[in-house]
Length: 211
Image 1 (cartoon, rainbow, N blue to C red):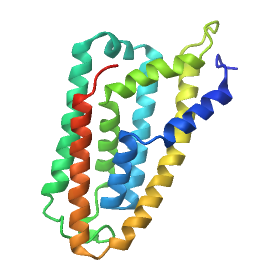
Image 2: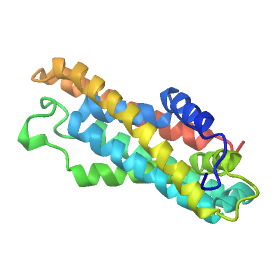
Image 3: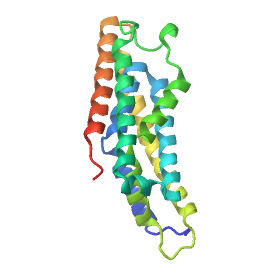
């Protein structure tokens, strides 16, 4: 159907991959704990939009460039790592780090900005691009004349299963962090820990290899 085979296996694989802790999981949890439910939801939308971008690139064959060019891989990798570190430093240096957690209008995060950051952190991770390039073709029939359509359908399925799981993480993390709301010292510590988490993710990405 639509040039796709073993679709149930693909859905099962998506679910297992989504619930396996990774960089996106830690990013979403960090946002939700430090900035609340809205920030977590916007992070999910941003990261999942990045998933669609990677799906599009894989369907067009552009991800092959990252797989064959060490220079291109390194440029994207270090750009993504630097961006994560920059976000982390922003959390640590935030002048409002001692303020209460979300629900205080003065410190409410900008949803659009958080969405953009989510997109960029995902798109600027070349390992995600290589993953989609190697994972999706396994479920596309070689006899099919279609290429673009099955890639996008599979990408949308991954988008859906991933969004459901990530939203579960958001609401769970936000519920736990709600216990700290109004405690200024705890809020400051959580923001600094989130900043340290993002810096750690950036360093991890910078040290990662293509394979």
